[in-house]
Length: 285
Image (cartoon, rainbow, N blue to C red; front, side):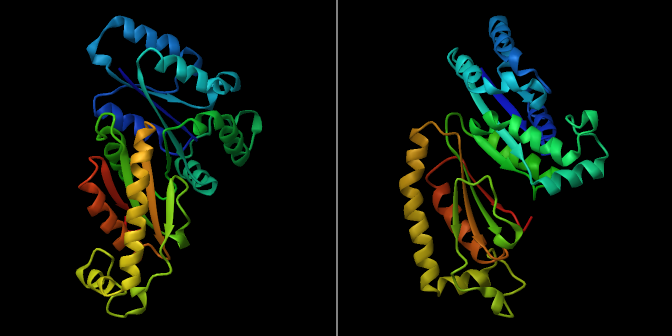
């Protein structure tokens, strides 16, 4: 049996993720009390019902500080019964979360008794620290809309080959903030920038003209080879530690040319070596 635990900050996309998993055949339960999770998995296992082979539960700060502090031990107890467990943690920048609550006019679950929204988000973040520390995958949805999030869940969680490492290679622009859900961040802003070539400025690293420009630049080739060789060594090391997810982020200034080109080249290279490689260009979305 496989159990996926969806947790994280309110407004960061947990419900969208659960609905996506449910649409793909998972048995999903939202706002599940963490203290009952062990008994719940025992009950499902005892039923021997094949329909419940894939389960997803949503856990939030309302489970209470005491149970959340015991999160690591609860997960160890469940895994000891032969159940495969993945913990996915969602987060977003506080200003974006405040904007989302303002747009939807929904109340934060911890804003009772007159607690301001920003303070409630901070309390929630601290309560969920044990969960975030033990997560297999942390997703920052600050720059992700609903449709992109659904695609991300399908690509990284649902489509991941059993027991295989899911590798996301993504480009981004530093001027739009560094993605906080990265395992490795490579800065390629030192490379020649097509932005200063008038004919190339409106194009991206996916266009042939820009790619031909980069192929004539020795530093670009050397940068790609160094990152490639570095990850060639370390990806198997992560896989040996039974890691489910690995995120490699390539950043330039705007996330349109240099980072896109390098990310494309890395994706092409590693896709032929590992089954679970996906590519994302954050700023181009």
